[in-house]
Image (tube, rainbow over all chains, first blue to last red; front, top):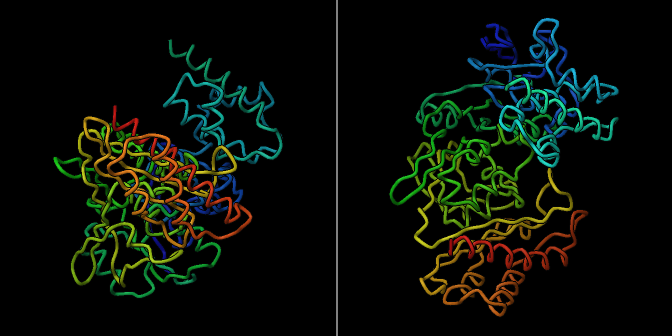
Length: 160
Length: 287
């Protein structure tokens, strides 16, 4: 099996790794770099659990090959908090109890963060559409949407 | 896929050499279809040729007479291109219907075309817009109308070693408009049960002077419906024209019956969507 030597910037740190062609970015994050915050849900791009931010865009890391991220900038859930200070989205997910089992949460947080950077003052409908590619089988979504709306309000306040 | 290899050539020539030199090679663009097929063992290529590092596949150029869209341009990138959206809103909206925002960040126009699903959302809109696919291969380059690229579900007329570098659309004339609509039983994240793309050009008095109508998911390949275009050309947008358009669209359908829609339902919806898409295209043409 051919191996590929890859250098990517992951959460701000230049990172070298070696992977097989058939290893996805999700496999690399979890099994090579031990960044297990990114979760494996469906493996076919349907559930959004593995969402990371690649070159500024949210992507399903199960649909990206490790071999192709050479030179890319990747943000995972491990990079979201600044030290002990949670991102407003993370804090609001706790405040609103917007998670139960937690498997969908890292993907939803990354997707919501990326969305709010483009649209800081969304309607509830816009948030629901933005998160259409992230499945949650526990919460029924209501608390997730409330947490994102509340986080958006706080982030707008902080930006003043 | 134990010996699967990966290459990311930076020139068209290098990509053609890799594809022509290995009959198990597959073009790898956004990966949102291909990686799923690999995972499900539907395909077992020996080499993935990533075309995303080739400049020609990544550019969008709007010229005096034509629009060029690189095959590896993503849906998200097209959606952010305001100039393109103003010129061919139906095409951009169709591409943006594919999958979630995460999928939009990866899925490419060329990939949606070459995956050759009869239900591919971008294809009826591209056909309505008169798009040609620009193909390179070991024997040089050629152009083929998008409606002729797909030969059956999952099948294209691409020969061994060939791949699509970019798509070329004629720049719409003044007083032109296009639209794409699809039916899905949900509000988001689904595959078209029926899709309809319409492009029209109008004279100053509102008479249609040119039209193209294309239907998706109602036949083994996306259908360019000449009979439907013939109804529109020379007509104004009125109830009688729309009814004739619907009948022509229905007549072009030979759909499958499956859990997502019966054949009877798909045929009826094709007529309804053709009318609605034509109405939107007309309104856009009138500005």
